[in-house]
Image (cartoon, one colour):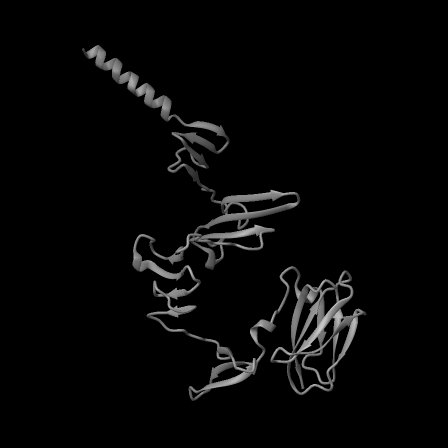
Length: 290
């Protein structure tokens, strides 16, 4: 009886050992019990990725996961980064997990695709409903402090704080002009006319404006010079708009130095847009006419 029990126990141990053993697939990659571990021989999930390097490099050893889509010469990437609390890392990045697209991936898309799908943002813990800080519902309403936003933006149980005294609330009047409301020293809301946001494009992220175009002087009185710095940018075009978005002048920039006459314009703020010959926007520039 004892011998039979001992053999049964030994067989059980051997079977458990065989079916639970860890297989080393290659250096730093392990498979055990239908789980895959990268950087760990004891994966705790179907896929466990662990980086325990003490050497901190913002672009290499902090990467938790790197996913790539490669097609011809295109390589869009999605990275998950994790940063420890160490002086080798910028203060605003410490103790953080960051998700972002790199390579030639221009957009980072988060989608809840069901008809009533919503995107919710939590801090502290996802398991507590009171930890929800913001949500975007299925029709695009954004709620901060509320789970049922009734407008494009609804803020509950909190204030909107504008700390920059030069910034305020921009609204469009019935005639299409835009006005920014800021407070004076008496706490009164004063409106001044500004360029509508849809006409303000400060730069093309492909290349800084300073490497392609410069416009001077600014402020100007009688003329401004559009200087083409990029030799590859040929037959560029310009358009001149007033503060209300009305196009006042347009033309082709035939030479690397083009002089634009603004002597007949009233004093105020204007916008010059420069595009390439295929009408792709290079940049827009706010100028002041004295």
